[in-house]
Amino acid sequence: RVPNFVEAIGGEFDLYLKYEGLNPTASFKDRGMTMAVTKAKARGVQVIACASTGNTSASAAAYAARAKMKCVVLIPEGKIARGKLAQALMYGATTLQMPGNFDDALSIVRELCADGVVEVVNSINPHRIEGQKTAAFEICDALGDAPDMHVLPVGNAG
Image (tube, rainbow, N blue to C red; front, side, top):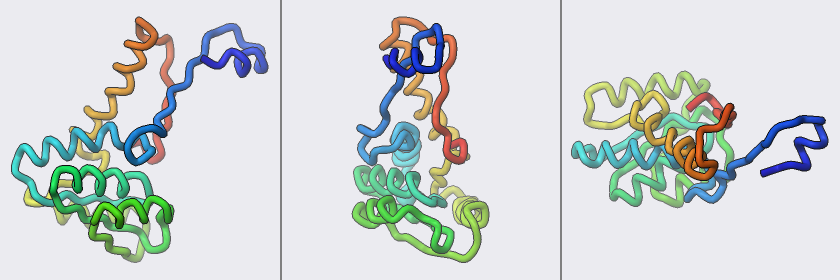
């Protein structure tokens, strides 16, 4: 609860913040990634892939390593947070830098995953979205009810 902030802006409401930095790779992306990787593993998929400029690469690599799967990350040239790239490499991901932007990288990942042998774990994967909603369940549990409003970071909305 952050009453000082509410008071400073002259508000008359309760405001709560939920810190997601304690997740394994310090990102809210871990919530969805654990579900996407778990579902892929259950179907016998051995390789996951994503396009990323940061958090998704770290999360995909971490959960793939935990599941003893391979992870391929496509990175738009020069457009990744170095700390997140370090995490992806530390967890054993194969990283490929390519010319273009994020959308170009995602387009290649989609082609790579089209036959179902390799699983895309970007936010276009419905299991990723299912996993991400667990934050809402935790909030309702903590408050005892659903809040009137829930505002969350979305990055590229996934």
